[in-house]
Image 1 (cartoon, protein in one colour):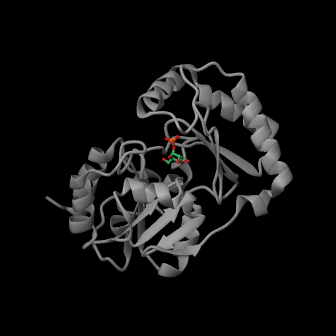
Image 2 (tube, rainbow, N blue to C red):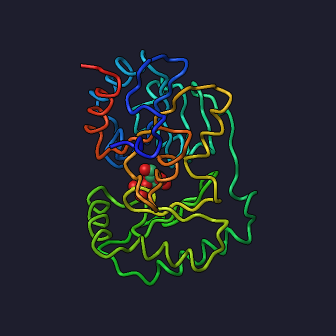
Length: 264
Ligand code: M1P
């Protein structure tokens, strides 16, 4: 599915492929990899050997650089993408070099930051879940990631929380409580499977599009799985500067790429 319907002037398929004027931008978790897992050898080769010769390629994720590199199975692979936008593009890398970064701490200040962290820890302390582990608040350059099960959970505990969350709407209710407590300068978005990302309004994935303004792409295609309202791909998927493609898994991403670029 694509957001083509809302933008009749933008083609769903890339008609004239050209590395210089077409960019394909990919979310990572759920789009190129299973949540927090490493990209498959098959999809990696497909992207770098079949897609990249036709169009420029970039990554945009809520995760930080270290995690993106891990999920691309190493820095050599990550560096082959023309753009690596970490933390929604607030932290930007090209060919392994840090190009720009911003700080949520400078932006909102220590006092507000602590209010958010204290409220979140208080709220989470009252939750009874199938499991609770460690690292409930992860501080990043551009965002705070809050995780009720704790980011140090195992893969099995992550999957268990995800199922429990789908049934009991733990994170959705948490987001509502955060939104009631804090003003609209902050956004609370469902991160991936187990967490909530907190960042200043405007620092969602559309942030990276600002970095691309001077690159003069004729088309920017975005592929993501969390395109529903409240999902962290929603804004960029619906942005008028992109042709959005909604995918359901890494396999679906590959199928859609084959169609868009007429690759066998
Ligand atoms: O998909 C990107 C998200 O990946 C992680 O989410 P989770 O651990 O909840 O699956 C986090 O890094 C999150 O910040 C990020 O948006």
